[in-house]
Image (cartoon, rainbow, N blue to C red):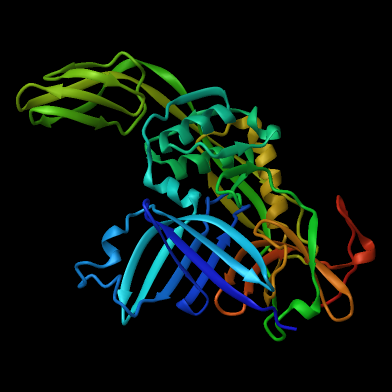
Length: 416
């Protein structure tokens, strides 16, 4: 029996809330991703299209509600399914448009919001706790709702964070400790190591027939990790040379510099590892001199056993800013384990408790199951509450009788 569903959405304008539901919403889709390959820090996004017969969001309407819209305004999205409310939490308005009496809104979660903030005050880190660096990044973004699991909070990191977005900086911390970051339903960010245990089962009656596709990913046999160690350079070098106009300027460096900068043609008001703030009395040439932190680059290659099918293996290359030789092997092993999940499954189904980053048992009509991680999922909130999921897992499958949460045993040659 098909579930009875309808979507609801609202935008908080500060002094009032605009809300729509059911047939006022033409399209509402939420897409979530998680990246255990440590290559990116994906954000969840919402695409919302509402019917606007009164032209409230038509830019030609000078008294329309569109004038009250602001980037990063809170947007809430929920779904009523068989009379029960499913709250997807808070997102933030990114952009909007209007066409043919339809208003379209693109929203992002709190991880996407981190792109709006620049992390200026990265420095040279030497055996600093991961949690302390995360605290710096979140403080720069003004984010207070976050947590980092205890098993990774005290891992000591070394390296350099250049000027970049707060999202990119957080990705560097996550990669160095082998963690992922995801939004919680309450709208905060949780940083944690990926887990591998099945939390739900997708049985045949919840799958859309004919919409399941199974493929095999390429064989990854090696992980090469590049990183840098930094040391104080005793010789002085120019950090900046250029003509500046009268006033205050922020000068960003291409390389990290130690405290103790000197300047001619301007006065230094602030000095930091990645930049300095200077004041110029009148247009003149300004020269800033100091001691660099010199980088020594290294790389380490880790390889797994040859494929039993005789396949030629691929090596994945990584470059991390906060990793050292001590952490390299742990991260490489974790990545090789992830790329060992070679079975890729795409399916459409009616979701229940499944969520991004969770492991599911996908069952066929004979009762056999494949253990897979949901790494990307789009839920159509206005089109019947149907999910399109992309998963990857074991290239061998198992039956429920063989499954234990921390010990997955396999049974071969079963097709989903």
